[in-house]
Image (tube, rainbow, N blue to C red):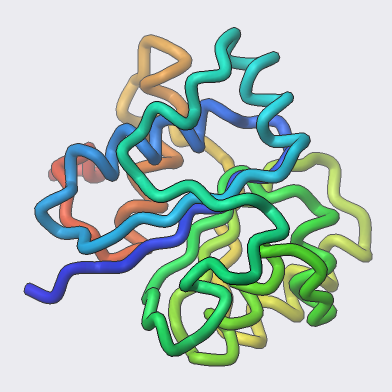
Length: 187
């Protein structure tokens, strides 16, 4: 099995629980992963603290990069990171990616992933959507990206907020090509 090199980007959209659960799961799936690089916007750090009531996002044993660090390995396609997950993905970040505006490490890394024809997964977390959002999602989809709205499923009968959010994270893990036991419809 070829191990994955994954970029996790966290933006300031509400939904820090999704990012936390994804990082928790990536720890558990470390036998399938070569490297994880993490970049967070300033707003993401503030939202994380507000929603999760702590700022311990940098306690994970992953490489963390500053939002303007264009020397991060995944700012270039030569580093061969194969998957980028933006969770949660704000509509502002999504719009900049859709229009090729690489003004920070998150948008630059997404641009690199798309140009190299690798896997970009955007966990969009906003509602309602306006036509600009929808057209930006269309543009990213046409460029090869995957829009995975943070829409939880209920058929597994989740009992806690974490279990409900995990239904989204399980879908993201599937999209990233990682193997994990999770609820499967009628299995």
